Length: 153
Image 1 (cartoon, rainbow, N blue to C red):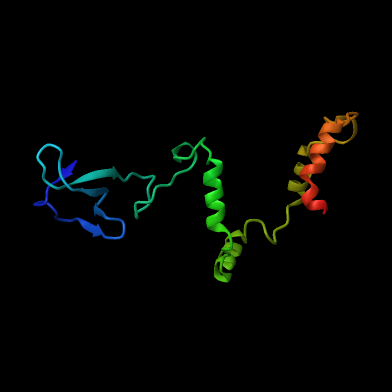
Image 2: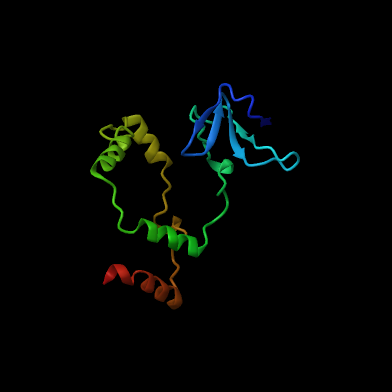
C-alpha cells in the first residue's frame, strides 16, 4: 500500500528508525516511484496479534529468521570480539537475579511430587547402564584427554 504526501493524517514519524507509523501499519520512505518518479511511503508490514504494541516481533521457533541456520565461524569470531571485555552492570545482574527468583527458589516439593520423581527417575545403574561392560578405545581416551587438558592443568 502506497501513501502519497497529501494523505499524512494520523502518521507519526520516528527519526531514529526512519519509519512512519499509523495505527497498525508501518511505512518506510522511498525516494521515488519506479513508474512516476514521485517520492512515497510504502508499507513494510502490518502488525498482528504476535506483535506487541511497539511493533516488536515475537520471533521464536520457525518464526525466527535464524531458525535452523548457524553463524559462520567468521561471524562467531566477530561476535566474540565484540563482546570481549564487556561485563553486565550491577543493576543488570540484580535484575537478572530477581527474574530468576521465584522460579522454584525457596520452595519445597511435596512428598507426593518427590515420590513421583523417584518413580519416574530412570535407573541406569549397573547392568541397566548403556555403557555397562564396555570400554573406551585408546583413540577415544586420547580425545577425552586432549579436550580436558585445559581443565586439568
